[in-house]
Structure formats: structure tokens, C-alpha cells
Image (cartoon, rainbow, N blue to C red; front, side, top):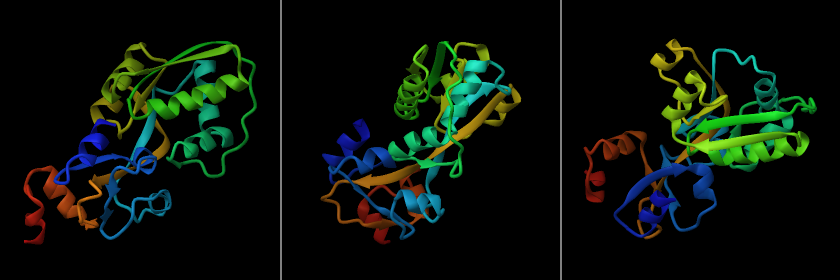
Length: 216
């Protein structure tokens, strides 16, 4: 929200934010990348080039029955519908229906601040089917989510990125629950409509520092 607010108020600014956040906000403009609009359909057909996975993380394969059941719900038809409602691209198109297992207990899920909003919706939908389960969602950052899953702080971690080799070598197992498109945003006052992926890279590493440089 801070990125969106800052870019909206400055015609010279550029930023990036989750597509789901941008689609719900009319104060900024998403530019095309390589001539392709940032839309859910274009992420799904892989023509839009900037997207990231929303991963849940466990230490090895999950063995706790409550953890396994919650993951089964997330990847079920109902769970993937919640993922889609949040503006993400579902990854399990032909998912089966979820049937409540009648479990009870508390799940502690922590990590990525980007994944947390959709996780809260998933937790609410899961609890509606499993009223004796509490799901505590903590937004602490992707790296903290992976570390927490490994050291037992969290039963399930959240990471809005691919896992690092060092993390998987340390025992972390990631599972993508949806894909998040990354919208490149400018102020509506900015006349730029399209950037190449190369130009986006040049801007964010500092090789291009003014809009006039784009024409060179």
C-alpha cells in the first residue's frame, strides 16, 4: 500500500506491487511489459513475464494430521477458489472437493506479508468447515517464514518467492498455492504505457534514471 500511495502521488515515480492489490486500486496505472497487459489470464497463459509463486513451507514432508488437512484444503477446489478470489492465479485447476476431517487444534502459520492476506481468507474458510480448529496467521516476512518452519516456530511457513538452495538443503519443502502477478505501476499522469522487460530491469538496477532516458 505504501508503494501504491507513493507512486500515485508522484508522476516521476515507478514501482511494483502485487497484481491483486493494483486491480483493486484506481490511483495507479499498470504499464504493459513487452506489450502484454498485467492480467490474470496473461499470467496463466505465460505471456505476461513477471510473476512469483506464493509458497507454503514445511520442514520436509508434512506429517502432522492438522497440517496435512489444512494443506489438502488449500489445494482443494474450495481452497483454490479462495486463492482466485484474492486475485491470484490458481495452480490446481482440476482440484477435488474438500471434505472436513473433523479435526481440532491450533495451527500456527507465519511468514510473507504478501501471502498473509490470502492465507487469512483460507484460514477463515477452513475454520468455517472445521469449527474446532484455530488458525493463527502471523505476517513476519518470507525469510522468517522459512526459518520458522524449519525451527518449529511455525507449523507452516509462507514465502512469496522461490526457496533458496540453502533453504531446501536445510530441509525446507515448498508448495506453490498460487501465482502472483507483479504489476509495474506509474502515476496516471505518466504517459508511459509500455516497457520492455529489459527496460524494467535497467530502471530497477539504476542504469536508467529518468523517463527521458527511455527514448535513447
